[in-house]
Length: 271
View 1: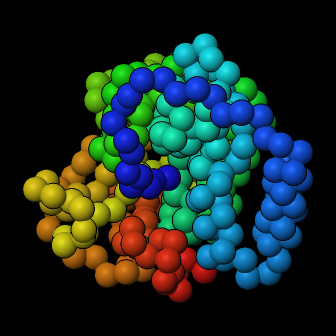
View 2: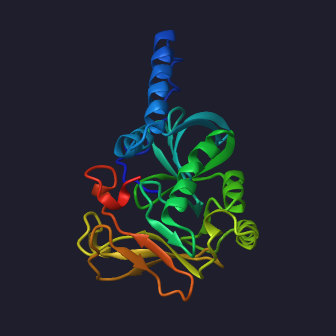
């Protein structure tokens, strides 16, 4: 899942917001009812994606021991609504979930639509439980605060809702063991088989915001969890499917530039 938020620099802790008034609570309930009706309506498409991206699934976590209000944007990202990190977006470490902006993944025999449904189910699942999490004192490439939520990570990986994802250093052995269980059971994203490698993100030559490092694709080893950036010079077309040369089980993603994932959406992102 991934956004490119702009965040303020780390600063002194901010006080938790005051409890909402009765009128505010009623207004929020009315908004939730309207959002539910929208999600159930046919052709909800872009409006629902904007609502999900802007608000997320409400929940709480024990962040560094402090009960913190959060909004789960997807299975590996939440935005913080209270406490010292209020206003920040976080990226959970150690694992990665599939993209939620459209049916862009194809893994083995699993269809893009089935994998998209799986991706969208992760945030509501996480919001049901108060997870213990800790900040790691680092930021990812998008400026998000890196956070460890080990129990949440284990639950998602064991259920096949996420893949082990190690960018620096080796993967957590316990997470790898949970992933092997999920792969053996053909659970979740492994339902269509287990390719040796998975594409987790695509970046085309000429894409905005890449800077000096240029274009690259992120590839994850499904045995070790190692996530590697592979530089290239290819200019992908919008809605082009890109596949790894990984033998009989395909591992593919459909390329959509970041600026078109939630606005001016191409036909390949239609529900």
